[in-house]
Image (cartoon, rainbow, N blue to C red; front, side, top):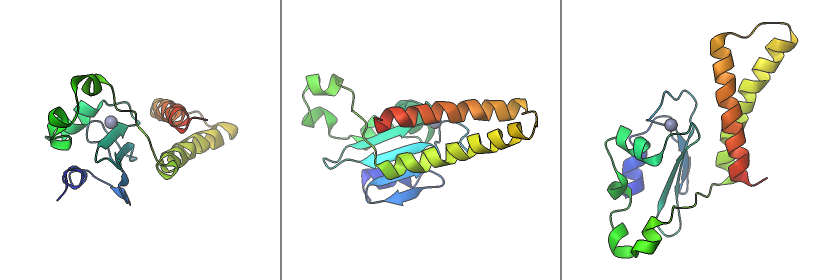
Amino acid sequence: MSKVENFIQRLGKVRGRNGSWTAQCPAHEDKSPSLSVREAEDGRVLVHCFGGCDVHSVLGAVGMDMNDLFPELDERLDHNQVSKPLKPAFYASDLLRIASFECLVVMIAAYDMRRGKKLSEEDLNRLETAQQRIEEVIQYANV
Ligand SMILES: [Zn+2]
């Protein structure tokens, strides 16, 4: 089993293939899958939570750390490279999957508001999360 497979099998609602997945983030209460996992061509594993969790929290929540994904980091890279953050890159299909779910949340809220229904505190909080995620998807999509 590869390092990334070992990580993926600890997550819920995993979807995807060919080195690119979305799943439930283990580091926060995640009803819709907001975790993106991608295995780069050079073997690096890029982990990103669209709910805002940092990679250490995500790995910690499943009992792993960076060494479990990058066992050879110190030997492979010099220290200048290690200090550089990995630039996340995502497949359009991952971004679309996340964005389409969040758009659905916004659409339901818009439908209720148009019909004069007052949104609950919980609905408003969920709407704020959707807004943040859509903003972040736009940022990563470079549009
Ligand atoms: Zn998270």
